Image (cartoon, rainbow, N blue to C red; front, side, top):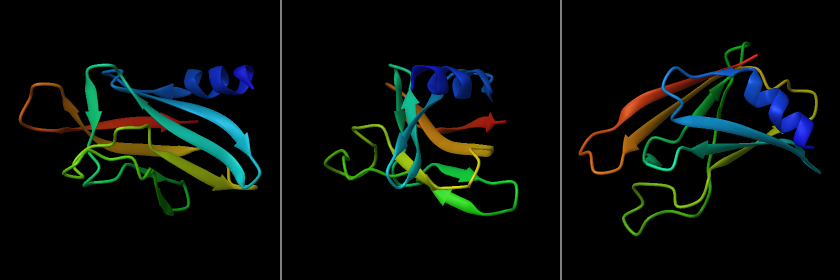
Length: 110
């Protein structure tokens, strides 16, 4: 399983390294977990998305949120159905700790 995680991380490109993706198998399919750098919060009001090459958009989510539902307190996840490749573009609104605004982070999975 570690080999799968390293393989996917190696295929992801992100210029500011705010996010990384971990991959694991689950009974439902391939689980993608979106991990933020230590000083980064992922905006839960605009859920992160994976845009597949065919135009389908899937959303990352978790029920673990801050009291005001603004940020995730646990890494959001997405389960890809069997046969759907982990390829496309991840877009997430991320906020640097101590900043009053969020910015767009993108990650390309190949």
